Image 1 (cartoon, rainbow, N blue to C red):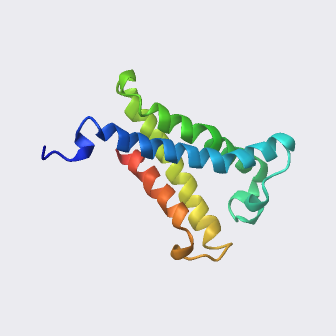
Image 2: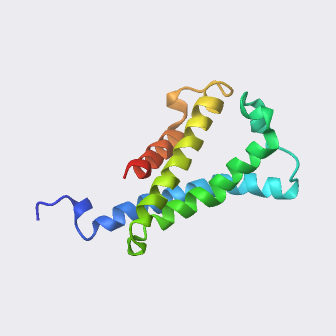
Length: 139
């Protein structure tokens, strides 16, 4: 009775709630980007052009971010929760965490701070997504 809930049989609910929320939010943010690129495959996303490093190859960068958000991150985070597939589940979580962390670091320090001129108090959601991604990176 003194074990933390994360170590009990119900602890799986807390991990899956984080997995599902993180996957869903990335999917929801990636879907409009992906849809826009499907409609116009050779036109980059408008915010990419404003980012110094990624503006050198805007179309490729646009596709990479859209595919990562709508497909890769959600897929790896969800697959990482299926313990029955063995040790590869941990690898899936780690890859999902790496991708999520990379995307959020780029978005926060490459877009929200320099382009939108926001501060830490303006980026609550982005910081939560970064923290959740870091959780799966190191879990």
